[in-house]
Image (cartoon, helix red, strand yellow):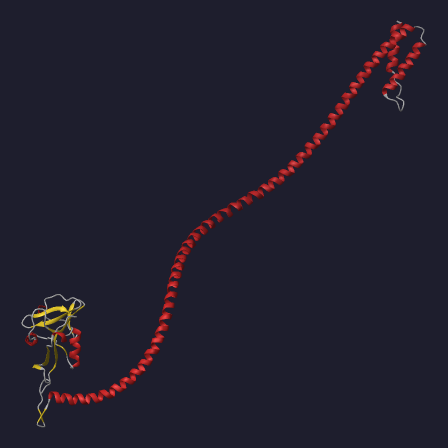
Length: 356
């Protein structure tokens, strides 16, 4: 009973706590209580019972201390957890608010970007169309540039040629100016000569008229009898013919024979009909083979032409083909033959007969 009473006393003592003095920890307070109990127990008559009660109390005190420490640690952990949860929830709330705010801003920005993207799409389509138009224009301009470049090249070459030609023309113009001056001086001299010759021609005309009268109408006992042809000319109407049959060393080329005829106021014979052809043939005295008398027929530009510019009327009179550099001779009773104009031949001159 005593032990039971002691235990109850100890329980009462353990459970009855005095207010914790200020400035002491909970462990110090428990220690003071245990010390008081020990002192009380020492005063108890039963020492063994007090020792047992103190040991049990000490064990319980230790368990209590451990429980208290664990509880305190758990409380601290829980408190820290609660604080952490509160902080986390606050952070989450703030994050959600921030996220909502960011989401709203992003939605607004997304809407703006969508509109901007649509605008960019339209602009891109317009730019693509403009690029296509510009490409076509560039191609057209490139072709036009190539054409212009070719024209410029051609014009440059042509300008170079024209420049060279202009230089040549300038040089030629200078020469022509010089020649013009020389010709002007020569013209002046010729004018003076012409005036002199005109004066001489007047005198010559008078003398020639007198000579013609004397040639065609010679005086005979102070009486004049006029003839159709001059002395030494053969008259076969309607012309007069001079048959020139000099020695071989005095024979002439076609041009030389014609010059001689002109000096006599006539020209090489021109045959207009068969009757005259026979007359010329009859006057071709002593001719044969390739030796005959020059007449006024010559090959020019693939045709037989008379000295008066007319063509040969009857091609049967001259069967040989006309070749440049060839002239015609009359061979007595053999017709006409084509020979080189440079050959030496005799010749027949012709001029109109005087009507008496």
